[in-house]
Length: 544
Image (cartoon, rainbow, N blue to C red; front, top):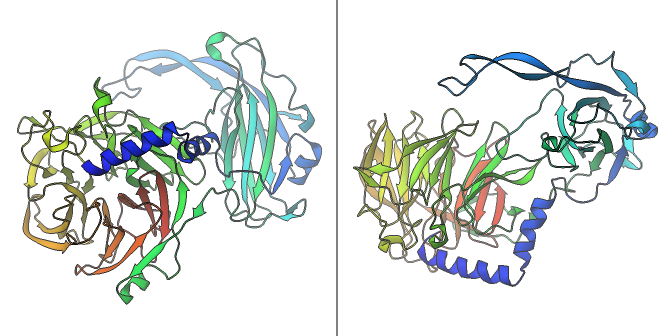
C-alpha cells in the first residue's frame, strides 16, 4: 500500500470500525472457529458404545508420571548442549502410532466423563483407533472431510498417526487451545471407507500455576463429517477476466472464479506459502501482525508486533511487516517496515537481523524481497512505511533503492525508481524484474543480473502510466513459463515474457501482493486490502 492508499484506507477502516461494520464482525467470525466451519452433515459421538462400535474402536487409558531426568543447559547454539543439569520428563510417551497400549486399561465410552488423574498437577493419555465406516446415518463417508474434536477438562494435545505438528503462534488443532476449549484436528479432506486413524490425546489439569483441585475428564469427543464443499468457509466471488490475448486461456481457464478464503483484516500484504506444513503466511502491516492461514486451521496469529515496537507506533500508518519469503532452509525472512530492517526468523522463534543500515544510514522501510537460488537476497526500500513517506524527518537515505545482500555484504544495485516495490526473478534467473509504485510513472523494469549481485542492461519492460486509477505497481510473482503476475492498475495483470499484457483479473478488491501456494503450486493467493483470496491457474509458479 502506498501514500494515498494508506490515507484513504485508514480513514475507511476507522469509519467501518466506528460503524460496527460487517468487515470488523467478519474478523471475529474467522477467529472464533476452526475449519471445517458450521454444522457437520453427520457426527459420531465417541462417548457412546454405538459410536465406538461404528468405528470399530476401543478407548484405552493410562496415567502419566513426572520423573527426574538428566539433561543439559543451553549452549552457545541456544540448544540443550551446555553443562549437565537436572530437569523433568514424563512417561509413558504414548504419541507414537505404533505405541503398544495393549496392557493399558480398556475403558467404556460412557465412562469418559469419569474423573481421572491424581488431582493437582496431573497428566494422562487417552488412545483410540478409528476406522472410517461406509455410512454415518444416511451420509456416505466417501470423499467427506472428517474432523476429530475433543474437549478435555482442562487442556488437551492431540497426536494423529504418531504426529503432533506445531508452528509458531499456533493455538488449538494438535496443541493446547485453551481452558476447557475444543481441540479440533482434520483427519482427512477426502475420506475413504475403511481408512484407519490412530488418535492419542494427552490430557492435563490446570491452570497449573493455581495448583488445581480438580481432575481430568472428557467433556465431548466426536468425529464430524462434512460433505464435499461444506464447511470450508471458501466463497466464490465476482470475478472479471479481461482477455486481451488468446494466450491467456492457456494460463487461466475460461470461467475461472476467484475465491475468498478469509476477511476482516486492516490490510493484507507480503504472502508466502510454506510447503513444510501446507500453510500461507501473510502480513497485515497496518495491524503490525503476521497471520497464518491453512485449510485445516483457518486464520491464526503467527507473530505479533511483526514490524515495530517503538513508542511512537501511533504515528505510523503501516508499522508492521510487509514482504515475506523463505530462504533455502525454510526460514522466514521478513521486511519490517517500522523497524526499518530485514530479519530472519528461525522455526524456534529466534530472530536475526540481516540488514538495517547502508553506509551507516538506516534503511527507509524494506518493502518486498526475493532470494536468488545461490542465497543472494534482493529487497526494495521505498519510504512507504514511514509516517510521512518521502518527507519524513526520520528518513536517512536520499534515495529509494534496490539492495542485494550477498556474501554478508549489502550492495545498492539500483536507484532508478521513485517507489521500488515488487520484484521477481525470471525462471533462469537471468533477469530481475522490479516494479514502481509511482502514480506518475507506472513502469516495470527488467535488469540483467550479474553473478556478483549487481544489475546491468536496464530496460522498461512494461509501461502502464496511461492506465486510469490511483493504483500503480505493487507485488508480483512469476510462473515457470516466465509469465509475470503483477498487482497493478485495475487488478492482477498477466504479462508474457516478451512484455505483452495478456489480460487482467479483477475481483471485489484489487490485489496488492500475491504468492503461489498449495501442493502443486498452481494456486495464486491474493492479498487484497481487507481480504485474502485465491485463484486456480493452469501453470505452476516459481516459489521459495
